[in-house]
Image (cartoon, rainbow, N blue to C red; front, side, top):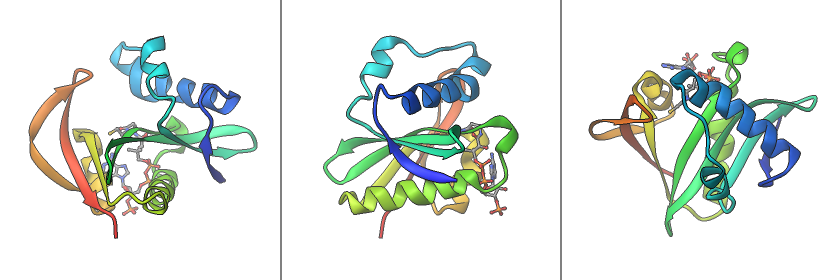
Length: 143
Ligand SMILES: CC(C)(COP(=O)(O)OP(=O)(O)OC[C@H]1O[C@@H](n2cnc3c(N)ncnc32)[C@H](O)[C@@H]1OP(=O)(O)O)[C@@H](O)C(=O)NCCC(=O)NCCS
């Protein structure tokens, strides 16, 4: 498995968007608009690939000079619970640290809270609804 940064608009980016549609949007009856995709052109786009196929992905968006927001964390359906998400998160955290960020924040789906807790993320504040499903804000300081 190769972990890498993805260039916006590239073939790998198209694979990433497809995976995100499949895992994070279609099950909710939603899809991405061209404006939403255009808005992420300066984000840090991360993908895990094997023999040209995308296995998983996530995005880091700068929200403050020392903070990035983790978004769009997804692992291909048949490959979940095999350690790929954990490996992507390690790569994303190291990349964020290397780029000088001190903190990662996110809006985590309630169904994924246990995954992030294992990685040291803490819930901050009350439950809220986003893309029709319950979420909690989570944070972690990078050391
Ligand atoms: C949540 C998700 C990204 C996790 O990736 P993954 O590759 O399946 O997770 P891993 O196999 O790396 O799991 C790492 C650890 O977290 C645990 N874990 C994984 N998913 C979990 C979940 N949803 N809830 C609780 N614990 C979870 C695993 O059991 C494993 O624990 P262990 O180290 O004690 O064995 C993936 O399952 C996914 O894409 N889910 C659907 C989309 C989604 O919910 N994305 C997050 C939106 S905020």
